[in-house]
Length: 461
Image 1 (cartoon, rainbow, N blue to C red):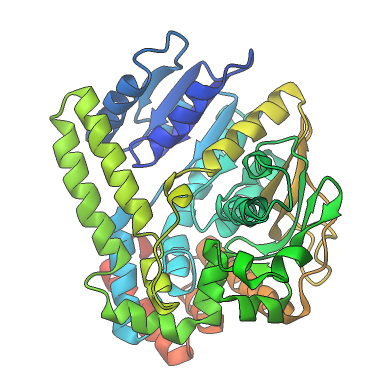
Image 2: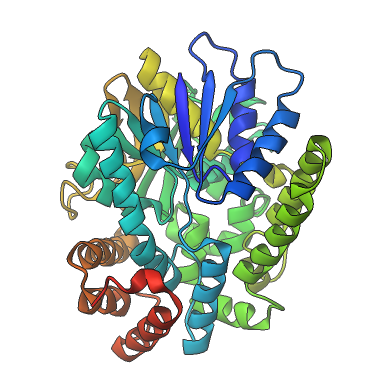
């Protein structure tokens, strides 16, 4: 197979390549095309990948591209992981949010909306390029906000675009690991989560970065009640410590980690204000240093620099949320980056070779969530085969989450309309309607500051 990776100079590209190297199947990826507008970063990533695959005679060939239509022509799959504005844009979003007193996380609330408003035009260009030059290709979208980008891209590519995210898989894997630690499920079960034909069935429903784990079947038996009945087990994994066993017992399910921004909004805003720097500024500085050093380093040294930077990045992930929850370190197992890369590989094998797999994905709702439109993108377990991805039956959205899901989906669809119509008023409406933005006045101030900073928002009038 041939795979095009858009955002090929990005920091997480080696994670994808390591997963491709580990694949020994007859239908594995034999050519990886990396696309990016930043040629220096492309060359740096190519150097690191050459070091990773140096001793593997079957390593996929690396092809560097700076032309979008060239890179998507003739490939089987396109993996999109772009970041319009880069980490600098993220840092600005966070600082604008702090300036007006709201949360600035990059995919949730103001940060997510600002990110989408400047990123969607590029995402739609990508979808159109695929439709016009290679309509038989499949687009696997990891570009954030993944739900919004996937839904907008579906208007051009239909079912041939599938959105992925690693947080539901990470949540399920950590929950199963907690059960393993108490010998409630067989050892090794957690390693099967998100890999395809697993004995684990995940009952998860919601939107991207806004979902709930409501069941966890292992060999046909739902083990989630056993987990929730044990506060010691609940607080042995990251989401349990983040939300607290008492709150999870109240909810009778386990929320995606990003719901911490909603359930503990005030505490997180306070923790953000106490931080020495925003997450975006931290990553901008860290990655700037990494790329500067790696550019002039030998391949092996560049790889070592990348791995050290990767680990530190994982150690500081959602640091202010963990501070808001009372302070806690991440478990060693959670410092191993990735998850989305294995999901992407499972999707490719399932489609290309008709090897059915069960994965949590971003797909069209159909009739799954009764209060959302059929074409709205939701995040649920799916069966994937040669025909694409189809949602599996899941529990209804929990009663306490229905209003939140409906409101956030309304915001997402308003963002898409704003971009398609070039409407400043719709952009402000999306901001004002979001539960984490307190009012029209705040929305207008935040958007005005964003337009001053981002020339990419000039299309909104």
